[in-house]
Length: 274
Image (cartoon, rainbow, N blue to C red; front, side, top):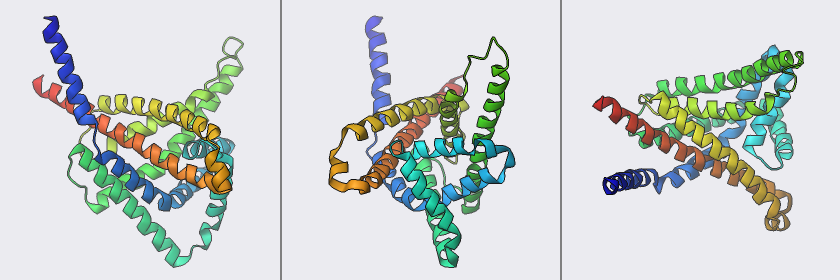
């Protein structure tokens, strides 16, 4: 019986590794990283504009900005924040040609992202209009959800601080981690044009968010300890590290998406048996 059990476990592990390890995933991450470089400014412009347009979020604007940029670039995030804020301020001077270029770059990014997600999940392609509406809804609702999370937590923290029994409870440090998990969950749920089991999305997004936060801390340690790039490239090293972190982030995300697909297939087979 033990030998049969060991064989069964080995079969499951072998199936998981064979399904999970895919050489194409790193190529997908590289492709998305390339498009991210061109679309990061217009996407941030939309997100920050939506946040500033909501008066209720004015008190937590800096916290939201800090969260976004600390995930975008864990090291030297203040410098990157200043540079990108400068780009955002100049966005009004784009003109017609610049605006059209930004729109085309954004459409190419989402088209590429959807192609990759559908290929991982072996799903059919959405129509152009369905794809645009789906991802536009995600872009517009994400900053509102983030702002609401910080706003509600700040209110709850203020209420807890007024009570002598709960004044020592600090919920704010947990919010960035919960937001990261929530964002991964929502994106995993709608990324591909197929039905995704919420349990598969929840488990895979939790694992992905944990790996992402661990990788972020590891990346900070690597940059602090590795002085060769800073010595060789000077201030230009910040840009190199930014591109590297974007690539690492996409690798983590793509493998998380693959993990979601594997879990989804497992739940699908269980449903068919049951």
